[in-house]
Image (cartoon, rainbow, N blue to C red; front, side, top):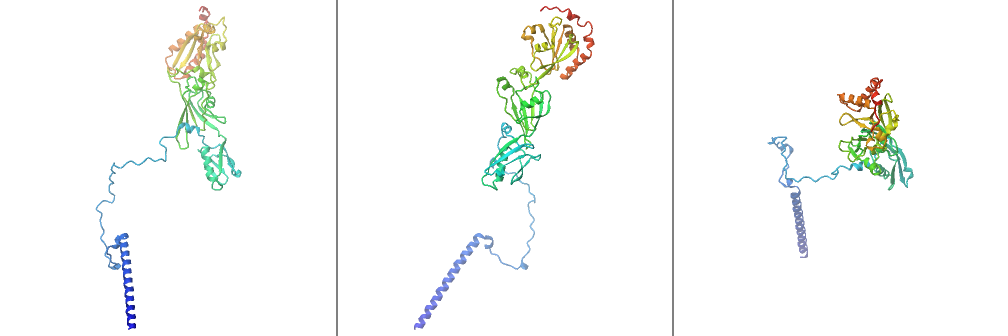
Length: 423
């Protein structure tokens, strides 16, 4: 009896264990099936594994649309994309660009690395625009500012030492050659000497500004390394008139300086005499003198800014014999393209009459003597072909000099000898 009970209990235990295993297996299978159906829906669809030989070849499907369909334009309802912050919305300020000195071949720099003297060095920028630095080798610095070179060296040295402090200074500036155009005595290409070449140095190298120059609108043009051309307007007249300091604009190699011409009607507040006496203008002017006393044409050189009385003093006429009451000042007018004559009284000028003491300009012609003035004036009035420029004007008086025998021959001064001395 006891053995039968033992077997019954053993059977129940096996039965319960089997039921528990079936229930566990069924639950696990259900979970796997659900996961498979969720993540692999295509595999959940009834598929039968057929041998490769029993698989049927599907027919080729011909597309109903062309291979390269025409792309329809997108609707305009989409909002515009936001502006990128990579580039500035406005170009950099030209004045700021002019204040930045950019290195080029021929420049010399000094590099000081605090706490690491072995890394400090001096270098000259070679024709390729490179320098050689310790540990870093060849580095391109063409077109970079001192601050940009300083940062580039700091980043490079930071790979070898901890937190290097780099200071870059300009040792010697490369030779500067600029182009000067417009109203200067000798336009062209000029080297400008000095540690910090300025516009005033360039003007002096070109012989100074002419009397037709407008120093209020001097233009300096510079081409950056990316091809961008920037321009800066410089006023050189106002500091001269007000006694101020000239603009502190340092020139760079390749700069172009344009001196504009003073427009007609724009000289109301522009003192030409003041400019002529300054160091920015042409230092000397040439005045031609025609007189019977000199028996022809003579040239006198006077400081720029001289007046008619200065020329009269330089001529040194014989006050007892010379006829100074009627003197003609002839000047070529660039705007009208012809010679303009003005009659002056030398005696009144010597007596202090300011109205007769007019300022002189380069290439003015002074004619002394009533008879000679009449002849020259008649020749100018009958000369039908207009002068193209001041060279044609000067050529006219050169031709007069070649025919001096007709003008200054015997008896030509008779009218002047009979001139009375009455005012």
